[in-house]
Length: 237
Image (cartoon, rainbow, N blue to C red; front, side):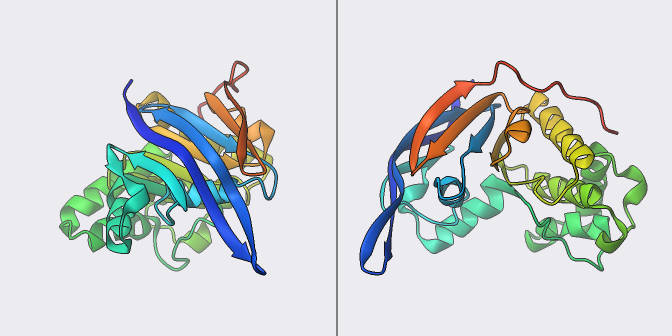
């Protein structure tokens, strides 16, 4: 495996009421291509701040963040937008789908904005929806789908631009337990197929599906270890 992410002595400082607060305080780690990493921590640990940095939604106060051999930490807003659009596939807790739009069109949207021809984007959108087990739901609108099915659509959408990493922020936070484990099964399947998956979560039973767990507390990494008791994937299609 080769290195896809390098975070070196990253700090993120916020000014609150005239005081400086370190949301991240000297964080360093690397992630190899094809890893499945869960980033855990309680509220206020810095995991959301780290997610924003990894997702090129923000830049560090100091330190460096390299993605695919590109120094993201010093990029302009336009360069960050380019990284977000082409290097990162986002999956959010709230799904972020258009409610009256079909699954096929929701998945096609990033490709439409990228100028990909209609025939090609429909073909790719169909492929990715089939990949996540929604072959029979292509024409269903988001409002006609369960929460788990909506998250599957969001995963399919995240795959369309062939991103370097899949970045999932509390992807099961709005789902009941059975649907949560189905979604984690899909992430494991994608990881087995070679996708690099980084997941932010506060739930140990969800982190148990990853191959490696990084734990944050008070802006610092307190644990970084391989998950020896990884949950076994069950086929959910």
